[in-house]
Length: 488
Image 1 (cartoon, rainbow, N blue to C red):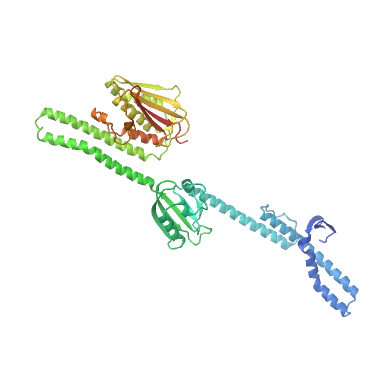
Image 2 (image 1 turned 45 degrees about the vertical axis):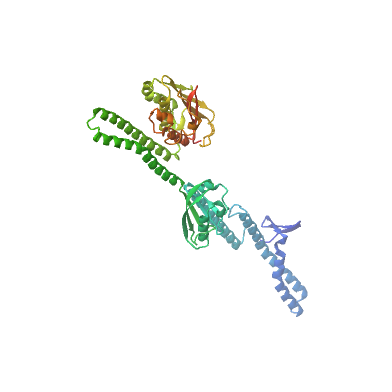
């Protein structure tokens, strides 16, 4: 184990040790340790020489022997400690764990290396496990539909799931919750939880950013056992959709009540007349029963349209996913309305491009909108004219002020009739619920005023657009734009 050769150069001393070369840095205080260990022996030798117990020459040789012994004793320990330090530094920098990474001869240093490797493996496994758990927890939180955020003692957001980032933006981490949601009631509730005045808070509040919403918030302080900076968790629930559904229900009841009141009053009045003054009048009975039949049909159509409208509105958030064959639908619509068109001496003329590809949508709703528009065209068109259904490919959907339109290629479906020109004032109100032009009422043309409202809701769900043009020469044309894939 003794050194064979010393060579000094630069800042290092190379020592050939056990047939292998190792580097000993000069700043490792090896010489200091040798001298310090040799000082007590030197003092003893000096004391013995002063007392003439031993000769000075013997004291010098004895001290040299002690120094050499200390040198030989400390050198391997120093070399191995130096290797051990470099190895641990390598591990701290991300180096590979190896039991044979250093050549050691001392049992104590070997034990230290084994202990260091075992500790490194343990904490590496623990870190990997925590990282995997964190990734798993984050993935679970990201699947939740409601926004969830974690905040620290100062109210800064230190974690947010996918729903939160989608609602407030990707860069919400490290923002203060006070600046994210502008609601005094919400901020005060968060403050009470952070100040430990309350374990949890529940409240409903309104916010205008990023858009107008009604939100329910649950703010809960985390238990003291939890580690990390997070001290509270905030979960939000968007009540805007439920409010819209409630409003739809109330509107449905109000609209149905209002529209059904008139035909019910008419039917009630005629029933009373038939039971009294017209009890024995066959002509009056036939006349009144015909009117009652018309009013009953109107109520039936009204209820059916109201239910259809409510169903469409409730499915607005559901993405359409069917392959829709427009050519097939146009053929089916023509077959269904041919008899009605012939009764008014009107010809239904399909005009389709040669290559009309299928689109992604709701086949039933797309057929409903084309059939409604074609039925209206027959109903309000001039006799001895034609209703033309045109289907063609377009590169893009024209923009809309009231609808969010999809990008990319689309299909335009136009329904044209040769009826009277519709004024700009009436054109602007055609999609309002229960709106009917006075001219149509004067002509006693039946209708509920819901057909175009239904068409509009279907188009909104498909991220399309609806345009209307009307002139005395070209007649009136309703054009529906539907994207090839509204979900792209």
